[in-house]
Image (tube, rainbow, N blue to C red; front, side, top):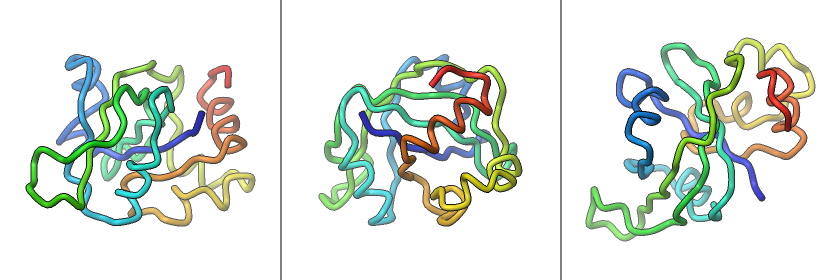
Length: 137
């Protein structure tokens, strides 16, 4: 299993809306690195749900339920989407400030590649984030 981080601005699509919907496809990605990360996702992988711009915190965990396919919002075949379902809300949100303050996470994509909307999360980073969130890894 691989781990990821996906960013959503809560005023556009919040964790609560995601839970209400029960499933969504991750569309609108127009960055090649983020697109490549979507293409690498496998069914069953887990992704941290990060509220960007307002809140700037990890609030939940999503699960990949369908691997990459053509983004239905564009005819351009370069772009793909992945389907996610809510897995669980984290017990305690983990803020960007907390992540940046933890030296063990200094090389995490969230710190190094702040603008990238779909990021990799290394297993050791996942474990640290789960501890910070009050979750079992």
